[in-house]
Image (cartoon, rainbow, N blue to C red; front, side, top):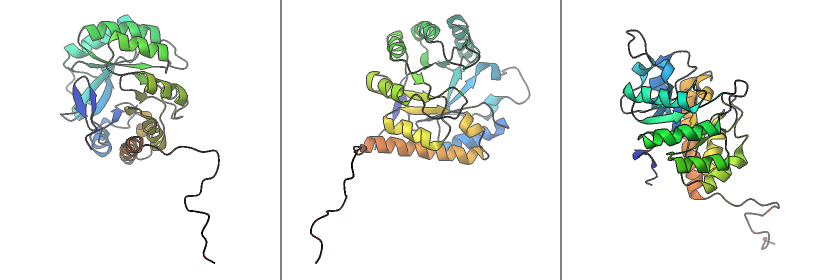
Length: 255
């Protein structure tokens, strides 16, 4: 079945995006990508050192993988725009994940500043993937601003708590004419599978893999879970019922 995800004109076979943070060693990254099948990886610009002659996270990202720099550390639209421009000037391409957080306790994204940054960067030719709380009004404004996708959180970032915003994400999937990529909070392969069964276009996660006892094996598990969830969504899940409904006839027993 030809079921590719298209973002910014690029076709992707994998619907799992991964990150580069929290690993015990960046040397795990190639194996994480290979076992998960992920074709998109996000990295904070502040973790890239283009002048260093020593180890650099970019050294471990294979060619052909779509780099998704993020604006981690930005507190407002102006800072996010500056980071995005620096990333493109440094040769990281025109994809950018807008991440604007001024809340230091819960690390929730600022929707208003995110909309402003998206509008400016989309007009400059960036493929903008904004990280947001699952707010329908914010998502609609991002569509108008030129976003290539929306990335609602499933739970506060780094918590591994799963889809605590499930019903709000479902609304975005139904109402937003862009790929909805569930980002943040996913802690188990079953969480990712559930998101994909709902109709999410993809999942992005980092902490759940990086903090596992065996990150490479966990990456493989997440890759399979995302595939299974997508296949279930395409197959069409059976309807739920409040009452029992036998799968075999209850009449016509042999005497």
